[in-house]
Image (cartoon, rainbow, N blue to C red; front, side, top):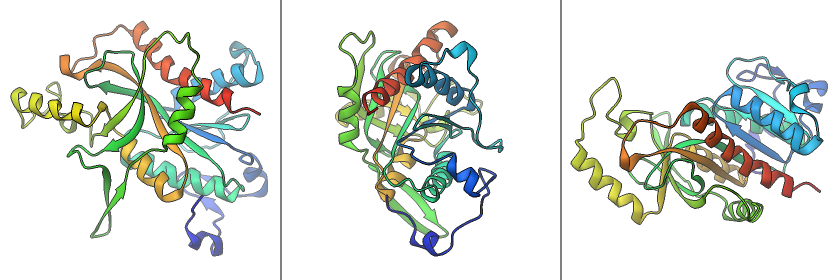
Length: 289
């Protein structure tokens, strides 16, 4: 792990965004962590924690309620064995804040060898609903293979490739009898859910017509871009700087080439969401020594 050298000489006593005092007792809750699995909502993070309790610890999920280790409303953090299941909110900005806080916390707790995996949902591009995409590279909406951010008035462009070895290990950990498709491809991290993805069902009208959008979508196949979501570029950029292996596992809820509306039933959507979590669990089980 590469960490800001300033922190080594100026250790913090309190992580504001997590609302967590860095006492010896609190830091002890975060030692010996191997994987951090990130999801948008706190409810999804709690759901994964329950599944991990059953898979890793053989605990009956109906008798288990995971404990949130932080008191903030910004994020949720659950621990099962040597895995953290955390929420990051929606968008590059919120996951970036979470990445800084959780990485500092784990560094102060003595963790130097970590893997970060974002698990979530996405809009497929030329793939059918229910397909799980594991991301190799993240692109910005302008198809630039880097994440653009600013330090005050200074534009910073950071590379957004994911860790190929981690991607390969995740694929290798899946059973042959898996009942849904998995693809390795690239992703676009849009700036927002509606206009940033040129959706026509938002409250405001898009500036591009369907002919222009169709032409744009045609470019994506050449870049092996399989889905839209909103966090992959920030995740990749941060983890490249920190030398933390990372990738994203995201199930598709719709095929954007066929429309903007999610038309699957609530039951189907819940089952789709389970798929990306199951892929992550299969990998975590493969890494238990």
